[in-house]
Length: 262
Image (cartoon, rainbow, N blue to C red):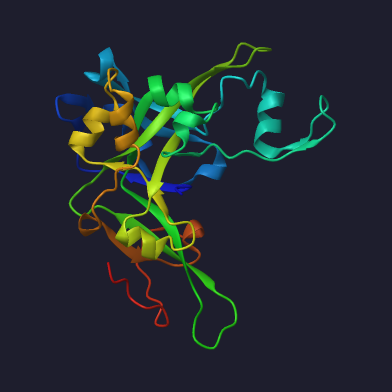
């Protein structure tokens, strides 16, 4: 899955996708976030399409898609954390909508309408994932963090879906999103070796198609399961305490950990 993302745009003056061009300008501080956890439930920079996907706005959205049927802030917290449902008398499980599974999103009531009508592009310079491995002499496996990038790309696009939400009690509104995930490619199968998932990373052609308003469902389903080529990605081990580090992307070597083969 993709619960930790990073964006660090220092050189580019514009965010570009084919003919779409958005000047960064005063938005630059929002594009300098080396690491953010989705579980912080904060905002993240997103390209939101307009004019049928011929253009887009660079905006901040809340990272955690809030489904249309969640009516109030209290309902939202219950949706996120779960707990006793006063209507049914049963305990509801917590719901995580930071990610949407690409193969399933058109069958899920929480995601279907957004997937059909409101697709966006989530910006990234690199994301974080864990590889599980049992070191020699140990009885338990350990989690080794990696920072995954696309060499030569200061930023790239992940497929996302978004949902506007209004609190029916207060009238407060916000735009919310989820990162779409797909089955892991060869590289990510080794890195994310438990879940075997990866974010839906899109090259320019696929990103341009993703935000088209007239995208047929057959093409949408194919796009939602596309895998970015392993040969164009790089995965580097980092410190286990990277979330507290000044530079979370700093490489770190674990002598006991076998090298990746993909």
